Length: 316
Ligand SMILES: O=C(O)CCC(=O)C(=O)O
Image (cartoon, rainbow, N blue to C red; front, side, top):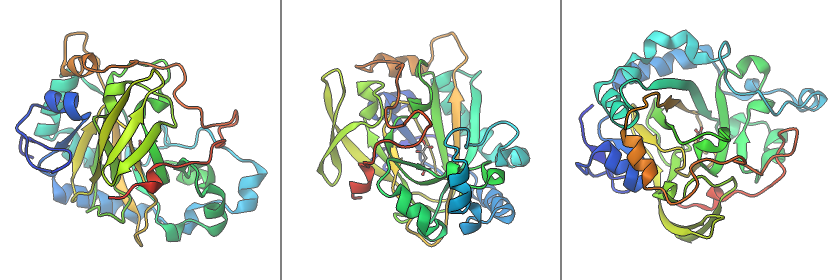
């Protein structure tokens, strides 16, 4: 990997530091790919142990007998990546990545979580399930997947959200790192990211977004602020890597390709009490730095109680 950031919209090298780019954009795209051969080798191993087809799913009657909406994501002891520890060095020891994370989080940063994320292609989602989830904002398919396969997170699209959504009462003391293991084009459920959206701080999901044109959204926060934010679609090659702030809005549309999209998703936390780049990023934020209610879209049992989806209307 080489050392400069890419402009989040144009892909052109900016020459800015990682911290400066995060202050401005809320995200940093690495200019060069991670080791392509290592990414491809890991992908092959993942595909050798998992069929990303309709056999992933419970049948409708089995689901309805005992719907489980919570606790359906990978966790320690049930995480496909645990068996591929040695294969992750191309990410975790990549020099540029280590330097970037060290700059923003301090050199003693900690991996809080790492997992495989799959964009499930339309042909692998059973019809009964498509009918139930159509229009829902968060189509994490974990509730509908057989328990043995819940060692991966499966999405059929997710509306614009902040990664702080899973962390009520927590400060923005971590970053997300996202890596593609194969080329991701427009039909492979690429990430849609709203550049600069972190500046309004933590806001609860779903977010107040109105599309202005193909690339621009108006974003309002509950405390009366608003920002015009630019959408960028993160298509990329094998080994593409990006990091973003926990308040940066991003989402995906359903995978319309004939194959699954496989990514790695890390959460990487700060441990250092000394000043780090993240302090500068957070100091530039004009809204709340933590929330006690990060989402209002779920009923008490974790099932969806709102059926609306903004990112589905995005072009790009
Ligand atoms: O991979 C996806 O489709 C969505 C991932 C995402 O936005 C997340 O895990 O926060």
